Image (cartoon, rainbow over all chains, first blue to last red; front, side, top):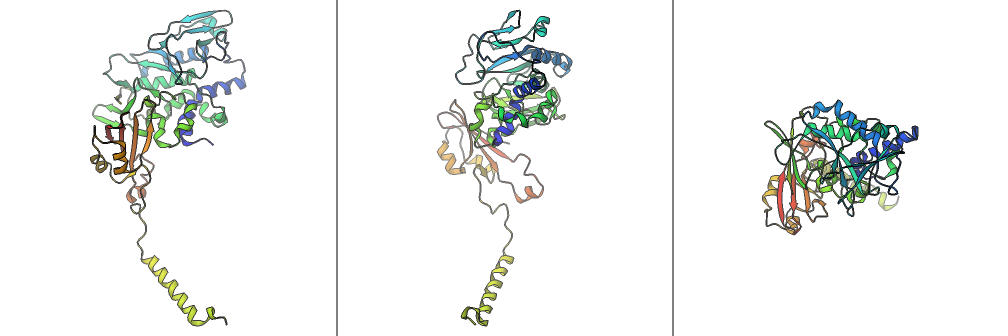
Length: 266
Length: 120
């Protein structure tokens, strides 16, 4: 029986994998990825990631001055994030992708990769890393993010199915959510997890003179709502990023895209 | 007739019942304020904040002063303790229970000393 923590947090976390599996049931080859290096790597569909890039172009009015990168994040305590290598692997080719020191990268559009339904494959096994979109407007004050950037990160992340998790039990319960895709991000309080650069103590939304401290329930993946949160932690791709994790009221129109998200770190 | 069913016994039982019922009727209804605090609940976040000292209070001292908190502890050794104000009868009548209650959030360093506080 899933605990409230699972219901509240990992429902969203499971979306990427669950959706991919649900989709593959209808069309088994649609998003199948070809693995050529490690057995069971933490790979993503190149097509899906390009679809996320397309969505970024369509919706970039949310973050007009920002560019899109993808980011690799550690998924468990033993993950070595040094010297992560990334490749696009198709049936007939393999192309290296440059990974920056902050573990971000961009993808180029490759017609053969789309045709061959290539995989974006790091040299790490499944369960060791997770993925997010990284959309940052330059020139923001220190220790802040911009809400429009986060809105677009959620939409790209949902479209590209970046979130990684590994609990199959809830797949059947997720169908209504899975059909939402990027629209899930338009909910007032979507459970899409963002990760700050450092451990958080507080998050405040600021729009001109309006300031609102985010409830602690929206930090730490909602752990303060559930005393048994640790039991389900291994199913969350926030496992080693709990102290940096937060939700945002993405679908609340009273907060404009230029709203600043201020972080107070531990 | 058996002794316990005689008329005087019946009268005594009825009188006792009447007394008990009367007491129950006269008793004021239980309010939210009467209910004991649950773990992580406090009466006043502002008052609770005044009882702790950043850079000095230990976890044991805070627990003794405020009771058990909802604790979120991290691998780094930091701990976040959360206390929420107990909803009042007025809050319940106005159905505020579903909205976030006033909360006091405490951050403990790995050393166990209080590092930061926040009321929301």
